[in-house]
Length: 626
Image 1 (cartoon, rainbow, N blue to C red):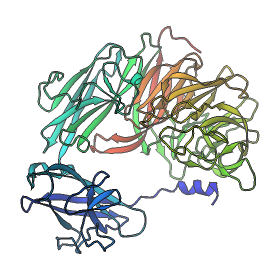
Image 2: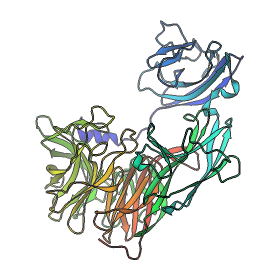
Image 3: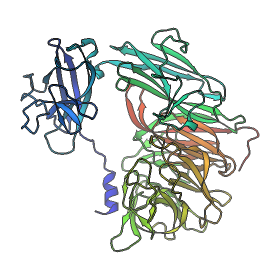
Image 4: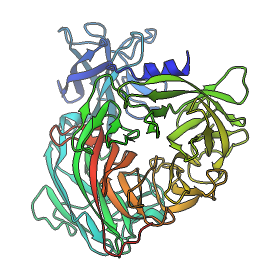
């Protein structure tokens, strides 16, 4: 199957089959019996069985449970039955005669005293196909051979959620305090912990001053010592109401930038299983800010987690996916059938071209790889897909974020004044074998520059932009390149992601070329971290970088990318940080960002959003210009 066909198939939208519990309840026929009654329904798949296993891996010696692989399961049939661990509706193990509902019991009379966790699941086994399931977490507390009924049950049937949340103010000067206010609603939960921490692991140099860094966890907490909890109506709580907190966070010693934090409420008896959280950002302004920014028209574009790129046309129209805006992101129109080319840019002749990220080796042509080129001649309403050939003699396959059979296009094509196209790629050359920490078989990336003299149909390598066998978690990857008004080429480079707990030093780096891409400066740290940077040259020469993780934010440069400052938070949700940015009118930016597990205040559920927001940028008096 060709790369082009694979890419075309990938654009087909279909609903994945799902299984969801309708109910899962616990009752107690006597002091030593736990009875589970449940029912579930499938969408696009049949529910064929239920079961119960230990929540975590490892052996256990509890009567009635039997080891299978890494977990112990409730035994529901004889040893010689291959499906002994599955509870089948109206068959062995099911005590409920009704169709569509199952009941099973556990005798805990001979269990040691303890607080146990189990996963109860509904799934499509022993059926064929991909494994589909829904799960519930069961807590069982045993004391003196009896089940402790008030504390035993499905954690999902309890309630602990944040109902009110605010930070005041969200932007401060270093040393000015921030007050976090949290209100909660509970059901069946009496003792609640409130913790202020960080969304991802951090190194000691990234720990907010005034927080305690715990080396064993690589986390930072406002309150030292386990369980790092701020007691309701305790010394740090400035709110006298029960079930709500007002906590003052000092920012003494905080450097300018965006500090991403997390407020967590958790049940003291099950802090990992029963909790709610809010990610938030505190922006510390520089002593002499150059810009003032305001956000407007923040809106949902479509479902997803990783924002692609904007394609801004010469008439001011902006394309993204199957959507179009003609008023700079104030409103968007979905146009079925439209598909903006991936990583697209408009050329001077009006054509739009884009490239698929992945390539694969061409059989019989050593050093050549085949990718997919997309061309639209009608403003993005339709596009033609064809193959493009990529010549990188030293490139090889490898394991990065996933297996890559060939080098990876990233960013957007840049049309040079002489008419040829330049595009960045990343991947590995033969011999690039610097191991990625914590990811066996994966090596750090290299980024290089490609050139096309036939509008993207064939590409030849120019030179390496950056390679360092020790930089970041992943090496130089996810590049973005722009041509600056002074004729320089500027490239921003990711080196890792802070959601990986085994390495925290992942600088966002910058490299430049003054000779059209033939040679590049050694990449330098910007002083910030982030993934998948995007870069915009504003009409007044200001450079804007969008990036994130945790959260999404903007950085500004008034000296052609030599220094960066005036960080602006766009969204505080920790993942994913994949962003896009373009200028839609002088002084107004359009930013696209992905947010995984973003809280929908209307439903109370967390959803995956691709969103856009307009950012109005005011240059303050005295701010220099490029």
